[in-house]
Image (cartoon, rainbow, N blue to C red; front, top):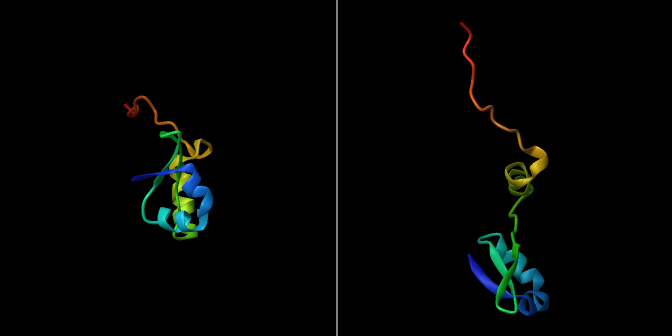
Length: 69
């Protein structure tokens, strides 16, 4: 994961989107992390990311599974 300043991202967003397909890029504002740029090489990658990280797809685990007697 690498860090890039916001001004560099603004000047060449398409290049950084391509780069983000290979590695996540931390966007820095005033030398502090302000965001994260994540690229997807395919629609399947985007879908997998959404399933893993979107709270709308979160299914809570049961505290304990009860076994029938």
